[in-house]
Length: 120
Image 1 (cartoon, rainbow, N blue to C red):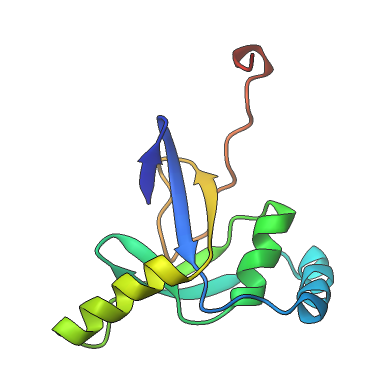
Image 2: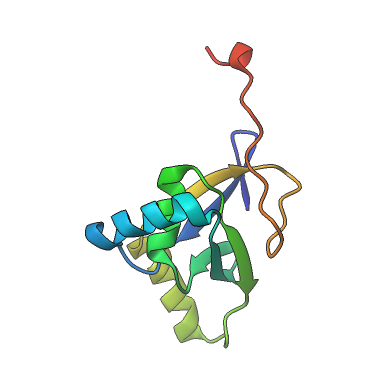
């Protein structure tokens, strides 16, 4: 989780770009199934999905903060560092504002409601 403009933001890099046809099906399923769980690798404080690119994009489009199960990389070598850095540069990512108390692996909290008086 990062802080951006005084807000807590969860950002996740997807494994690949979703296919539009399958994405539509996943969006429709998620409308009834609710919040998905996505397994991610935490590399230097950044999250990389190891599954669920379609679920990530569907959750983003529906405004649903996914549950995240976080694991570390299986091994740490110079080659792995280059791989994770390449992933960050090459792949799409999705971001959600989350409450400061958000914890990975547990139930996700929706973002707090915006105060209409604070918007200009």
